[in-house]
Length: 141
Image 1 (cartoon, one colour):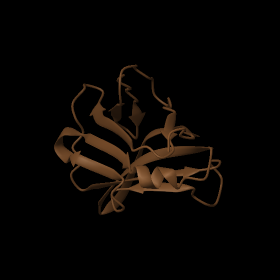
Image 2: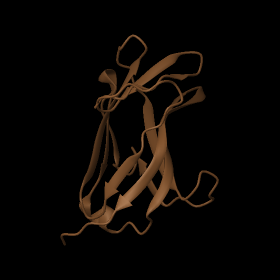
Image 3: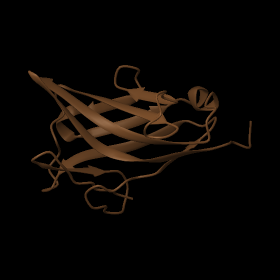
Image 4: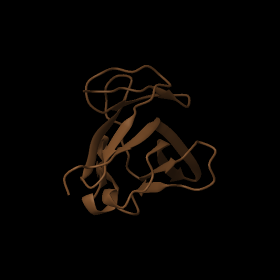
């Protein structure tokens, strides 16, 4: 399935995840299987399907019980190694959480958003993806 989100900050961007096309402001819900490795590949492209150059970017994603909750339930960042900007010039992003880390998850549902941050004098934050997160308990242990 390929998802394309168009986000505008005076410019159009797209996010390709896996096979359906979504309009601007759309969301993509995520299911994490507790005790299994979570991996999701994303490709960030513009409206012309050209990869966004992410050179100089970092990425961050937080899961919270609700969007206005003070505490984060789980965090993925380029700094903690759970978000990989695989090839900055091709727009390839991987969200990856180890089986050990998903086994330690104690929440059942939440909300998230994924932001790409570029600082070049002034910080620019592009919120490229958001949605609900559900955790499915694993059966086989």
